[in-house]
Image (cartoon, rainbow, N blue to C red):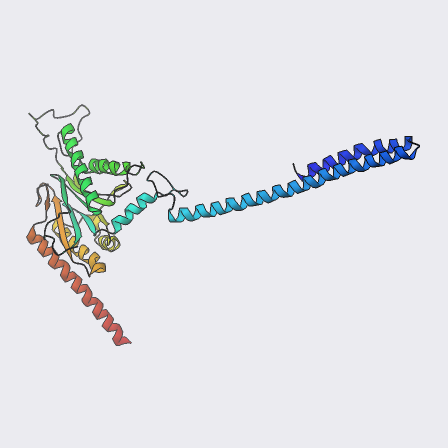
Amino acid sequence: MDCQLWAGIYLIFYQAATPIINTSLNGMHNGGRKLQAVFLYLRIFDMSSTFYVSGTALFRLQQHERKKIYRKQSVISERQIQLTSIGTGYDLTNSTFSPDGRNFQVEYASKAVENGGTTIGIRCKNGVVLAVEKIITSKLLKSGGNKRIASIDRNFGMISSGLVPDGRHLVSRARDEAASWRTSYKCPIPSSSLAFRVGSYVQAYTLYSSVRPFGVTTILAGWDSETESRVDGQVGSGPKAALAGKTTGTKAGGPGLYMIEPSGLYWGYYGAATGKGRQTAKAELEKLDLPSGNLSLEQGVKEAARIIYAAHEDSKDKDFELEMSWVSSSDGPTKGKHEQVPKELLEQAETFAKRAMEGDDDEDTATGGGETMEL
């Protein structure tokens, strides 16, 4: 009850008691009755005053309690904002969103990718090139071993940056998906369908608290046949036209390059880069004008090596090994298969990359010297 209600009760008591007491005073002639009426009046007045004072004290107490609750709610709100900004309390499980719509477990997985070696993919006019910077963590490692690029099907390759065991698990899953497609449809899986299946699998690991996201970003490269090839185990030529008919004169297939992120998001790219040196690699890829489709597969191998060496400049104190693979059209150097880049071509690409880096250093030195002379 608030102060106004207690004041109303006080007025009711006062207004009700005053006529009664006045009547009693006018009708009484002896002093004893008058004295009793005065005492009755004072007692009623004292009771109404007590009600008023008690009500006022209770109202003030309620106001004080409300202020305490408000302060506590304000502290809780500020604490929630602090927890949201740093992820505390919202990053314990994978299935919990923060109030501003962030999934911190997925963001932490992306941080794991940034600690991995630089990985790139280049889509050329007649194929796709994959390249990875393998940091040498020990001098006891065998040169050329510990492959990071894996073949998924005869015309597909996959490479990842981040946690290596997670990448190997995704390679195994992608191979299962490719084999399942062959079992069902008797032909190689299209690159877009493989990217969709692997991306959906990765995204499923962001939905449940019993699992964690994959700490890798995967680049998938392949070549879809431009001609209608015979299916596995086909007998005879089959019908010349399906029930819905066939469209003649259209071009299908070609190179495919997809990058799958820890959230399960995937896109098709002309040039993709991930890992520690992704920013430098992306800047170099943008200079190649890949959407025009003028870059040949052999040129793509050399440019991929140069970009990996450029991205490694930020980690000069660490040795690394360059691993590359490619896949071409059926009339190209790989005959539609995903293969490792031949050793001779790989050495030529590394020589080209080193010369390009030395040329950049010479240009920087000359520019610096010219500025000094002007000063």
